[in-house]
Length: 257
Image 1 (cartoon, rainbow, N blue to C red):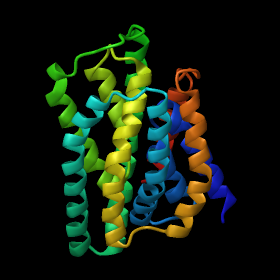
Image 2: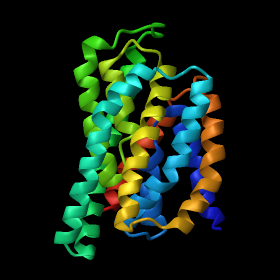
Image 3: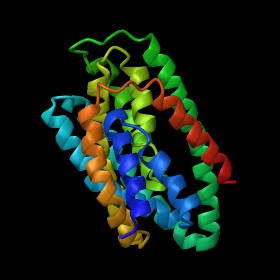
């Protein structure tokens, strides 16, 4: 048991619980840069530990009635096939490219994606600053195509990099559904991730890209962390957390090159 890894899981799990973002976006740089894990193994391990973490978060948010299940269903309609497609693409690329070259390319790709997500989180901060307190009920049918498309893109990216289930989904949902309560967006985001992450993790298990010992250490911290964070959802302000998360991701993204 590595308690340094468990502490990282605790901090990241808490961030996921109360903001819906920051999970893989923060954990991936920790695994790759601080622990020296190969990017492909880091992606698989990150997905494996995320499965119980997201499921526990979904359970807590469900009990708090902060999940809009129809929104989750629409996201999953795109996210599930997207995640499956990402796994098959990664498997095909792995057979064509040597492992060292694949790890190098994946590392650079992760760096670029971290920069993009950092910008999206800052944009999400600006959007939320302009929004009202949110309505109790927002119709989803007029935006169904956009929501399904978001799920498709996020599912595909999660399988390839493990990043995006929270950061990209939350930010795009703030753009597409600006009048929905932020608590419902966070809860729905966590529930959507709980559906697509197991699919992506199963694919990486088949590819042999999961470090199970490290996964266990991460879970020791992440499960209590996501419970604490989910309980605090709607209480802690994110006007400080989101810019700080964006800065960390931008900095670590620069270290990927």
